[in-house]
Amino acid sequence: MTDMSIEEYLAHGGKLSSPDNVPPRYRGELLRLMASFVDSELAASAGFADAINDAPGIKSRIAAARIVMEKADHAERVLALMAGFGVDTARYEGVHPWAARLARDADIGARRQGGDMRLSVFHYPLEGWVDAVVMNVLQGAAAVIQIAEYARVSYQPLAEVFRAIAPRESRHAELGREGLARIATSEEGRAAALSSIAYWRPRVAAGFGPAGSVRYHLLARFGLRHRTNEALLAEWNSVCDALLSDLKLN
Image 1 (cartoon, rainbow, N blue to C red):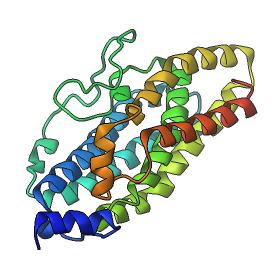
Image 2 (cartoon, rainbow, N blue to C red):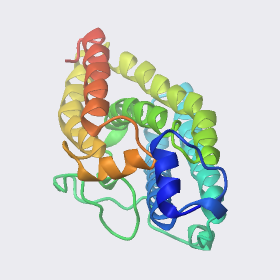
Image 3 (cartoon, rainbow, N blue to C red):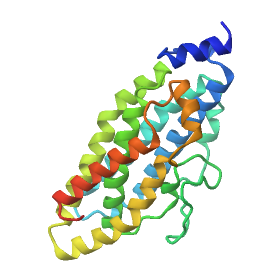
Image 4 (tube, one colour):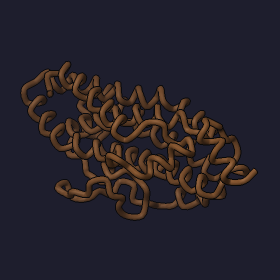
């Protein structure tokens, strides 16, 4: 079977199940997707770990610690699939500055920075508990939508991993919403939350990628994407608008 015939098979909804039968360009795009997810989960885990000690109570500390642990676990699951493609995963066992962040006022859009593939939002620093909760709520809502998209990818082992972790990522978002609801009960908390929402919302939105993406069409032919950046962003905006309206934070 030629690469072109495989591409036609994928374009018609076909699935692949082994590293042995993927065409080279598909392999490159699949590994890029996986690396971005792994690096983003590790950066999220490392960044949120610093917020654990800012948590206002035991329940909040447990919730934050759970998110930190499970995001690292999600990264490990996808990393195991990357190893099957011959990726040298040993570099992930060494020391990498996953907790490193840029200045708070940096403006990098959706551009990658440094030596990893994390989403740009994970290059910005958290400032205290309220800020961490707001970021988790907004990015958590984005993660739920993006993982639902990834759970349909044409590489079946990866789709299965995403389907397995989707409930836990949904729970992370739910924990964030519960925390934000408590914060919004006081005027001081509401003011801090509104400031953080204004900061984080455009930065999380950038993670959905540009409108009219040329790359999307290639990924769609490979069965690695099914919905456009615009459609995913619109769903996220709708989810956020409803959530923030419920908490009177819109």
